[in-house]
Amino acid sequence: MLFRSLLFIAHYAGLLKLNKVTDAIVYEKKLNYYKFLENFVAIEDKLTDLKDKAGYILDSLVDAMGLENATLYLYDDEKNTFELVAYKGLSREKLRDIDHIARNNPFIKFLRKENIYVANENNDFSDEYDAKKIKDSFRTMNAKLAMPLYYGLPLFHSRDMIGFLNIGDKKNKASYTKEDMDILNAFARQISTCIGKERLYSRAITDDLTKLYRIDYLSKRIQEEIERFHRYGRHFSLLFMDIDDFKNVNDRFGHQVGDSVLKKVANIIRNIVRKADIAARYGGEEFASIFINTNEGQSFDIDERLRKQIARHNFSSLADYPDVRITVSIGLASFPDHGEIKEELIANADKTMYIAKFSGKNKTCI
Image 1 (cartoon, rainbow, N blue to C red):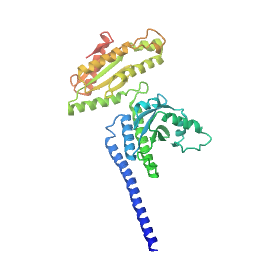
Image 2: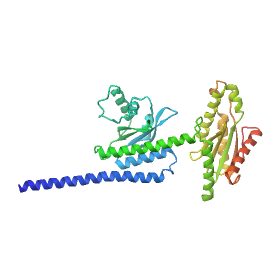
Image 3: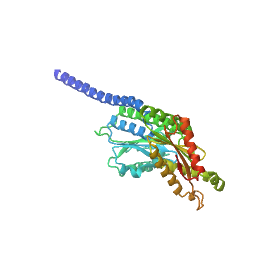
Image 4: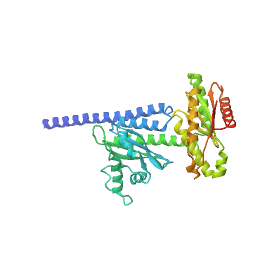
């Protein structure tokens, strides 16, 4: 009897010890998540790029849960595909063949119904799904990866699927617990909220046609750069650009072709300006850019590269006419040399653009 009592006490003590260890692990994971929330609130405004925010959240998820690897895809409205925006624990080279997933992919269709896909566990699907196609789609995504992914979780905002998370095994090979899934779902909600807010804000400050920034956002950023100059002495320049004889393009080829020209010019601007710079559609066929932490000479070199690239580009394919050529006139003003307040700087950039236009077009003036 005494021996049984001792066995029971030992067994009970072991359970208590095991429970304490388990509680400590769960507590540590939850603590890591709360630390992430605290840190993210502190740096969210500093991370102005959506991909930077997505990358930070994915890194935090992998660290908090001890994952081997994970990927994050977000929906791209223009391409109508889900694009890879962040990854951890995987080779970029091996991800090249799966850096975008079509909206009509069977795996995506399954996730859009608010389902979670678990490899080798989703054996029974309702009649509306083709289980083989879904599994084959997921296997295709995993085909070239050294460390396979196991879970697919959709991300929703306002009932729209805006992306999905794929996560792999844990580094310690332990099974996922209910607490793990609770934390994982919390991260998913955080990602969805962050990305949803960012997309709404992006639409509010972005021109519908060209996808460059709107004029009011440009104006706000000019004032911010002026304030930074007064704090840190960081110079910047403002470009104003007008497409030469754009009315003739609309009159000759129609407004659809004119819109195509505007979008193509916007793409050229986007490819030439640096990531830190601000490119905007100022109105009609006028564009503007802020070159941050750049002196007059450096800005002039960028302007000339932009002007020459547009002049060299063949726009004929947009209108089926062999002689479609587009040129631009550019004006440049630097702060504080060409204006000590926002309105004065804008006026001088605008004035030098018209000097370029009325002195022969297809040139840059300061």
